[in-house]
Image (tube, rainbow, N blue to C red; front, side, top):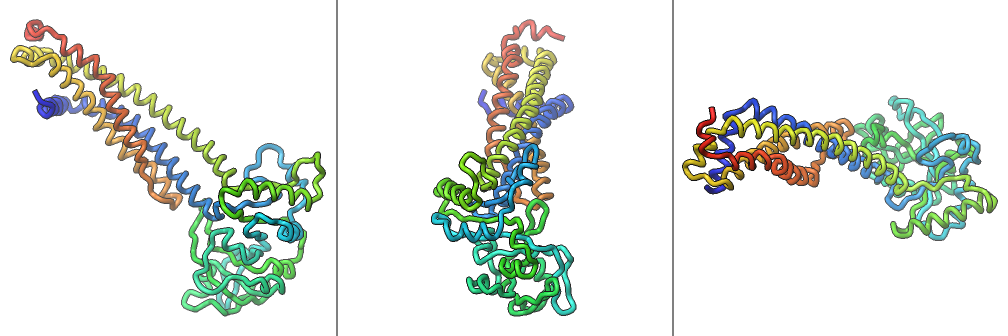
Length: 407
């Protein structure tokens, strides 16, 4: 008997016991669903996080008063001196490895006016220099970037995000127009390409002005700021970080026996925290799914044992007309594997669909966990063989004479 005939017989036997087959498949579906849904959701988070990291260039380091992730008592950080524009300017003069350095300060959240139109009063007015766009992966849609003279002479020029353009300049060329911000007049020199949302927050509701202009208008040169430093390339990030630490300790006069009173944050540090978090999610999904699959495998074995008992006379007839032990064994193993594969396929599809609901909610990229899918198919074949082998051997060892007498 060839494998195709064995497959047809197995399929026919399963079809004759639809309810029992469906209930057995359901246990497989639940186990596979738990694994695939969790893996898909984590892959969505991973894709979303990596896309979010592109908000800053891959080789960008940030000097800040606070760490990205705060654990425990935060008084230690609050009591630190602010990172100021003076620190930024001193660092710019002394740094050698850094490719670009830019300050970053949100001076105000306010409304932007143009003629008779105005935005919501939550637009971010940020002060920086000509390297801000590159360090934060913004691109200019139209117009020009800041010039060094714009920064040096504190000119009232502005680069606006897409959210502002849509409200104030829907059908008008905005470059060269004048806008009002907190009673001050600025000339629009560029529009930024839209970046969309990150963690549910729009990235296009900002207006960037020279930081020197921001200090003149809003005061407070000693405000706490961020300093973004772009390393020459990814391989030189450690050396750039070491240089930053040494220079910032000198600039801020940190004594040799004291800890740093600032933080150097990088994408790698955030990625490490995120990978630790997702590893727990993976483990949870595999443990829950593994337990479910173990129960499902035991269920498959029980169902197959019941099937052997119910089909004892059929097995006797097949042996009487020449069926070998190996043919009987292959048939029952095929039935067990077939149940596992069909249940696994259903669980895979449902798990991918449910896992990608997170992608839709977060407006992220749809993912398909190919590794988990292939591993699941192989694993379910193993489950079918492992838990189907005992019923198959039992069926193959039945005595044909006794089987024919079975009622």
